[in-house]
Length: 375
Image 1: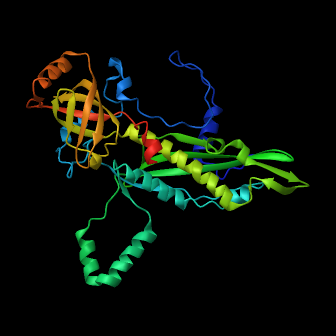
Image 2: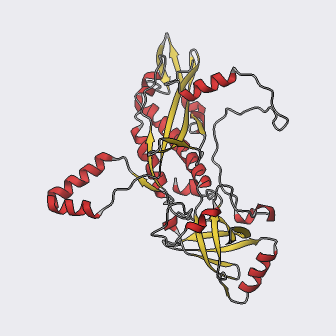
């Protein structure tokens, strides 16, 4: 039996929609939906790109470039180069139900997941995260007050502007547990994460970024043999300690970590990093931003020209950032007239965009080795 902690409004809506019969249009067809665990989506290496792949990513708003100042420290609202300010929430609703493993699952504390979520997103430096770690902030202010005095603390606070979020990301978790067998059994856990993006000032639920639902199963992070246990006369004998909160927390934490990694890859695809190309010399490019704008090591980026509202892809590059800038190599040039012209000029010196036009680099997703090395 599965035990579910909440019945959300979305679930009710789906049930109502399922009861309504309609005839599909000729533009749609029936298909099966997989209920298996979610997978992370990573960027293709620049070395694997074909000419047809060299296009600006779907989620990048090139029109917003007209509103940019091209000052990394002072971008205008609406400029796609500006890092959004985000506050995150993770639901702390309890698990409801009865049966084996439910009590230990109910004891799981979601606050640690919120801290994990904040740390992962802040670490990529593509967003400005407003922490909800009030305990640490309060302790530090108390220490400052004791060491420096109230006047110094007041001056320090007055010099700092408290960040206000551009939007709020809220994650709701659904945790279920199922046991199989009688004498020899296995505990199977499932963690589902659904996200919503909110405008905290208008109370509107936003459609972008659309992070969807993420499903992680215990078998994704543990060999199923580790989840096996043995009972006799309705008493636990050996194997996985499904009643021990420490053991259950270890499994759920690993599942949550995997879910957050998948969430991160979706966010990186929906909100790519962007930089302006300062110059091109041969196949080498120089960018005006690096880690300070969320450009990741081994980033695959599309190089394109922007002039008078028109976008022309030039090539695909492999990019490595430093703190405030980045360098890269164009691995494949786009097969078009503009790319041929720029390539020819860059072979005889440093190519710089003419007045009125600009060249940009935009990422296409999470680098393949990022999840292995950084999360």
